Amino acid sequence: AIATRDYIARAVCPKLYGMHAVKLGLLLVLIGGASVSSAEGSTEEEGNDDDDKERNEEIQVIDSDEEAPVAFKIGGDENDDDFMEQNKKRPKDGKHKKSNKNGKTIKSRRRIQSHVLLIGDPGTGKSQFLRFAAALSPRSVLTTGTGSSTAGLTCAAVRDGSSGSSGNEFSLEAGALALADRGVCCIDEFGCMSKEDRTSIHEAMEQQTISVAKAGIICKLNARATVVAVMNPKDGIYDAKESLGHNSRLGSALLSRFDLIFVMLDQAECTRDLNIANFLLQQSITPGSGYDRPLEIETLFNDDNANGHWGMEKLRAYIAAIREKFHPTLTPEASELLENHYSLCRQQRNGQSLITVRFLESLIRLSQAHARLMYRDRVLLDDAVAVILLMECTAAASSGGVFGGGGGP
Image (cartoon, rainbow, N blue to C red; front, side, top):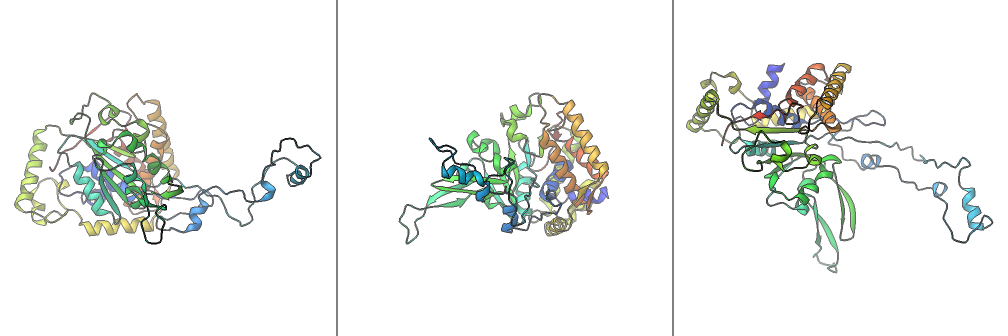
């Protein structure tokens, strides 16, 4: 089963040599976790966009006169008619109970979309991973940090110039995160964004919404998108002696929102450099089309990890099928392992680690995505072990380990 998983993961950026951990991590992020309603235990599918579910996710508004607080009146006394009339409507026990006349239940939804950040040296294939994620997803928005602002990422209020309007009316134009709802938002050069622009996406990455209060328009937009961000280190070359926050210049509030953070280093290694050079030269001799690698060069490598892969259409169809069919639930063994791993990481954390409650939620989401990838409806112990091993290759590991990458230009 693990060999089959590795074979499927090879279809992610097949023109890049090696980097199995990054390919598997990106694949799990694109698959996503499963959402289970906390009220009735029913599963909420991503493709359902009914208004009833959107209203059920919000707290019920008190609309009954019996639950309204007593109005405060200056100079009034207990003999006042208004005071006596309102006091009759209050419950005798002094407690306000919420009415449930329509039989609606209050539901809460947790985030099921995962986010990934790729940071590292130039020439390690970061942008190729970004563009592959945009090409694989049926709905995707590709943007860059140098040309994006707060309005471009969230939404902008523009003056309505249509015929019949007075010119004083405004309308909202959705930004990249709102357009990528239930899809993938790919942001290149993430480090070139200003601090104010990066702060504007905090709500979209965690609460999956965008609160708008512009030009007299107050509303909330859905932004249930997976964020795939790519950036270069502070000084161009990643300094392994410094912390991730120092190299990325990103605050801990933003870094903790990423489920996976891969640090890709261009390290000199003789055997690996020869394999990469041979891999790229063979592709230049027999070029492929798009993101597919030509089959003629599959048998030219002694490394089995470089041979054989799925096509783009087959991989897209497989992801769509498992996302629709499977909504995995955790088994007691997997839950216990994730709980113990989270507790151990919290105890061994240092000043450079990013171990928060979001780390545990990321483990759950990625475990569900791994179970989907393995074509099953339960998160087994093997899925939890695989996700923990993947986490040890990221910058969020308690040891502060980094992943060394290399590949195409």
